[in-house]
Structures are given as structure tokens and as C-alpha cells.
Picture 1 (cartoon, rainbow, N blue to C red):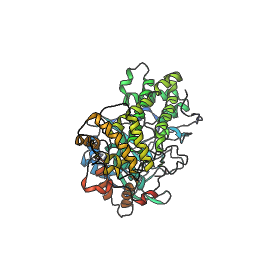
Picture 2 (picture 1 turned 120 degrees about the vertical axis):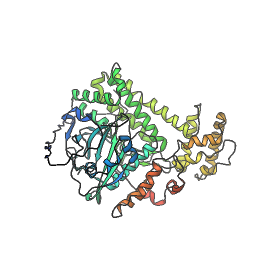
Picture 3 (picture 1 turned 60 degrees about the vertical axis):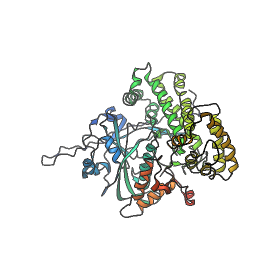
Picture 4 (picture 1 turned 90 degrees about the horizontal axis):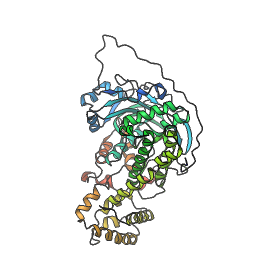
Amino acid sequence: MNAPESVVPALVAATVAPAASTDRPAPACEPAAFDPGLPLLPGFQALGDGFFARVAGTPLPDPHLALVNRSLADELGLAPEALAHPSMTAILAGNTPWPGADSIATVYSGHQFGAWAGRLGDGRALLLAQVRAPDGGAWEIQLKGAGKTPFSRMGDGRAVLRSSIREYLCSEAMHGLGIPTTRALALVTSDAPVLRETLETAAVVTRVAPTFVRFGHFEHFYWNRQHDALRRLADHVIDTGYPALRAEPNPYWSLLQAVSERTGALIAQWQSVGFCHGVMNTDNMSILGLTIDYGPFGFLDGFDPSHVCNHSDDQGRYAYSMQPGIGEWNCYCLGQALLPLIGEPADAERALAAYRPAFEARYRELMRAKLGLCSAAEGDAALADQLLAILEAGGVDFTAFFRALGQLRRADASGDAAARDLFIDRAAFDAWAVRYRERLAVEAIEDPIRQAAMNRVNPKFVLRNHLAEIAIRGARDASPPDFTEMHRLLEVLQHPFDEHPDHQTLAALPPDWAGSLSVSCSS
């Protein structure tokens, strides 16, 4: 199987020893145990000890439930009185287990920055439980930052307030944009010190997803030649995430094809809003095609295809323009891991061939929508590519431009100013606008209808780095932490296509100091 780039990871042996059980019978005099009121499912724990280690969270001193995502809690069926119970804060801090479930850290391996890294695993994540929501959906509830696990390597298993705020904000921002993602349910804070580049304070994010299984889970069992475990994992993912594939002649081949398609479509959505993930390692790729693991992410300000949002990415492997190709490369790594279940390399390559058409089709569909085009026509791709070229040449703000473009009128230039004034080279915009108007004339859609449609796909608000930084400083520099700015941001990020007249400053171009901000893998 010929991957887009050589894949020659070394086999690294790994064992997963379950932690000693600390269960004990409750004395008869104790009060009734706290019940969150969510039905438990067997979930990933049903796969057995070879897939994870049972491990309790490291107690967090004086935890405070700082933020709760009420709308997500409602979706899960988590009642307000359960959230307000002191026992829930202890659970979401990692201080006590979810009633009736063992917390676990799962084992996986992966390629990091293109090199085989061997065994990785949940180094600062604990899967508390899988629960059934009122609508019948299954959700895994996971803590990020709850302490050390057998897979922490040299880390302490903690997360800091800074990175926890970024993850909470961005996962909800992506959900607001309609992009598949893990979700943030809660944020627990503490004054406990955590050393990163400087001394910071601890925090724990509760995040939820249908599953947190990654490409790296499959790589782990493939490269350790544990093919029976590989099959059990694939069966679990098919049964819980892709049940329709069970009836296919080779469900494992169909799984690879489906994941390739979902991954291609996901990255097309990233590109369409200017989102840069920053660390597209195979252990950060969701088997369900979700955006997962928010670390050194960023949204483009001035359009620059070569933009690298991760200060740790010295080679620019995960630059914005590289993301589509890296997504395909990662799918090849998954395809290699699934070979024992699929058969011949040529068969896997046929499944992987679904990635590029899925990406291209979704990307072109999204770009047409961003331009207000309701139908496909020859020349649309060239029109979009010409636009991106002049945006790059002028360093024009990506989000602001597409939002302003809706004001352009089909018949004349009277509505051009909002978009045109973002250019230094206005002649370049004028020349492109002539071609754009010619294309709009073919569809003859009334300007107000087109603008309304464009405003439904071109966000007014995205999580720019400086906005996240303002929210972080507001919380970090106050005692107790002040989340006022974070609440304000969430209000617009959860509904990014609305006007929000009271929050216009959050849609403004970034200030000069934003250019000095830097995010890395510790973010």
C-alpha cells in the first residue's frame, strides 16, 4: 500500500497493567449514594483490561465548578439539581468516581509529526463513563487534566486554566459553526499550582463525545501484532459508531472507507472557516471524524495558506495549507493498521481513495455557499481560487472578508465598500468583483436573499487568538477567577452567524498586539 509519504514505524511493545482496585463496601450508616440520573452503558470498558488501565483521578484540592454548559447538560439529561450537588463537583474534578463505573485511561500509539512515537495513551485524560441520553444517543464522559495515568510518561497529568479555557471555548465554537467536534460540559478550577513554562493553576475540563477512539488506538494493536484485539476494537467501533456497516461484505473495509470520507469532509469544513488544528498527529484523529484535542489551534486572521499556528511545529508540517494532505496521510496510517482485517493492500487503497473526492466535493460545496452560489457551474473553482489568491496577496482578514462579501450587489458597486476596504490593492478586488458579478448574474437571485444565505454560512464571530487570550487573562488575573469575558465570548461563539449588536467589538479585526501571541503544544 503506497501512502502519500513513507510510513515505517518501529514496533514498540507495550503492556497495560490494570491498577489495583480500591473498591470497598459502603458502611450501612452512610447516606444514599449520589446518583447523577444518567443510565450507564458498557461502553469502551467492556473491551477489557488490555485496552486500558483502571486508574483513579488525582485529588484536586478545593475544586470549584466554575462553568457548566447548560444546553449540553440538557441534551445529556443531566438535571440542574444533579449539577448543583457537591458530589458532582467532586466527580468532575476527578476526586471521586462516577457512581457505578470505573474511571479508565485508554492505551493507544501513533505518529507524531510524521514519526512513529510508539505507545502513548491517555496521559491526562480519564474516561469516567458512557451514558445513555434521553434521545437514545450514547455519550462518553471524559475528564482532561484529572491527574497522572500509566501513560503520562514524563507529564503530571494535569491541565492548566489557560489551556482548559481554550479547549472549552473552541469546542463550543466549532459546535456553533456546525463542525463535528467533542463538546465541553464543565470546567472545574482550583488554586493548586501546576508548573509549565511558568507556575499556573490547575483546571479540569469535562468533555463528551460519542467516542474518543482515535486512529492511534488501531495503530497500537496493529504494531504490537495484537490482531485479535484489533478486531475487537474494530467491532466495537462498528457496532457503536457505524452500525449500518455490519451488513457489508467486509465491514472493516467499509469502516476504512467511511472514516476516510468523514475525515475528508471534516477537514474541508476546517479549511472553509480558516481553522488550523496545529497537531494533526494520528493519535489526535477521531475515528468518527470529530475535531478532537484542542491544543495549539488557531483561526486565520489575515489569509495566509502557509500559516503555522503551533509554535512547536518548526517544519510547518501542520500549516493551514497542509491539512488536507495530512488528513489523507493519517488515513493511510489507519489503513495500514486495518490491513490484517481488510486483506490486501490494494483493497485498502480502494477504500482510502474515498478521501480525496470527499474532501474536494465538500470543500467546493462550502466555497460555493460562502460565495452565495446556489448551483454548481464550470469556473466556480477557478473563481474561488482567484479570490483566495488576492486575499493571500493582500493579507486580507479571512473571516471579515467573507462576512462583508454578502453586502455586494449584483447590479452595481454600491455595496462593495465593506469588502473592498479590507484590501490595500483595491484594483485587485475590483477586477475579481467583475468576474463575481458575471457569475451572480447567471443565478439572478435577489441580493437580500443571497446575503441572508451567505450570512448563514459565513460566521461573523470566530475564536480569534486574542479573544481567547483576553478571556484567559480575565479569569487568571482575578481572585477568584472572573469568567465574565468567557461568558460573553460563549454567547457569540455558540451562535456565530447572528449579528449580536451588543458585542460588535468581538467581530473587530485583531489589535496589533495579537501578532505577538504564540501557542505551542503546551497550550
